[in-house]
Length: 318
Image 1 (cartoon, rainbow, N blue to C red):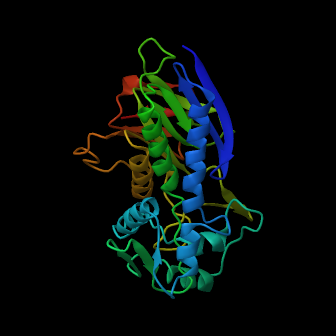
Image 2 (cartoon, helix red, strand yellow):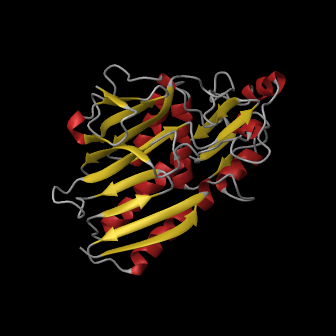
């Protein structure tokens, strides 16, 4: 089947867009334009965006935002208040550590405590009628980085569906959405690689074979800080201000919607293991794969027959 693929730069990573069938270049270009539009609303890595404006007004006044920004920010606030590991206000702590950047360092206990005082998700207000967001304390920082890619991937799929496209791949730098029946295999399933945490990017330890889905991973292996032999990763615990410690190297969630995958990878990573009765009432969550530091692969809601092990150093547990 004919396909068209193009790579773009955006969202702080490389974006790979692929369409099958009878695609034309504008189908990809317009999708990338949509990505750039949402990035211009949600980013905190540019001088101006709606989220930057909200943060600059912290402790001063509410900020009215667009429909898209308001709906995602409101969802982020309500999720943060559930206290399962996700916190959209953890920005001050992330900047303190700055793991993954040249000036990364271990903050002092006093700095971390000061940062923690700016991360309470109840220290903000949202107004449905005016579509305003207000951060009550100066220095608070809203950051949608943990869910923005999922939201954007879902919007790209919506756009391609509106054009009548039936199959495609949306790869937003580790956030993967596989649309429609795969034209690459006779059984129309997609083959999704699970990254080996101990190997370079692209080297997988297993593949998962599933119908159309999103695959989102939370892992500790890509952004780290080494201080005198102690390794710190970038996933911070909003309760302590330090990298969250457990036995997981990564967890990957497979779901219908990429935004759900973003949320549930965080939930499961902070749980550190499969959660009893997890997602049993949500048919849009298909399952999860945990990779542990002691080289175990744990499946939840994923049948073993759907997984092909490629590294003999790992063992699959159900």
